[in-house]
Structures are given as C-alpha cells and as structure tokens.
Length: 119
Image 1 (cartoon, rainbow, N blue to C red):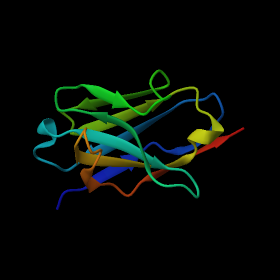
Image 2: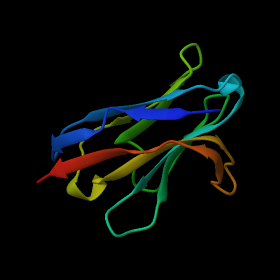
Image 3: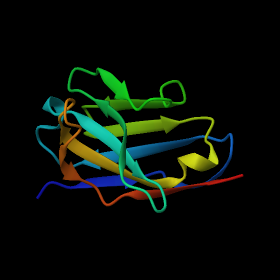
C-alpha cells in the first residue's frame, strides 16, 4: 500500500521558516507529479504547489516567492520550503501524489502535518 508521510510541521513565529518533507513509498515516485495542499481552520482544502515529474513547479497565487516546492527522486521525497510565514499560513498541510495539473486532483494523500504560525 502506498503511503505518504509528512513531517516538519510545528509552531513558528510570524516571519519564520519551516521545511516540510513528504516521504513516499511509491516505486514510480520519479514519474508522478507531487503536490502540497493546505486546509486552514474552518476553510476548505486548497492547493499550495505542485511539482511535475520533470521538475516544473506551479504555485497558488501569492505564494510563489515565499514557498518553494522541490523533490528528490533518489530519496522518494518531496519538500515544501516555507519562508516569511504569516498567521494566515496556519493550516494542516497535506502531501499528495499523482496530481493532475489541470484539475489539481491527486490520487494519493498523506495524513497531514500541522503548521501553526504565531503573531
């Protein structure tokens, strides 16, 4: 069974940084797009960023420049570097695999990791 395990969440002050990791037990990791999504308290889940198998990255409006998605195919791991964090970035962050750019639909999801930003 394919698993995605997120790590790196936690409590950070506004203006700080966090790096999320997503370890995937997916033999075809190198060939699928990976995504990061988030769900703020009381809101719906939203796309943060998607990176294709070729390394092309797509970001939600307003996040490019503060957030950077990357991947290491040798380690079957995707990352989300988050800088200059704001209180509105506080959410549960989910890793996803086999994502379609056009629909932003992903087939496989992790359990999520909490990111809390204090003002």
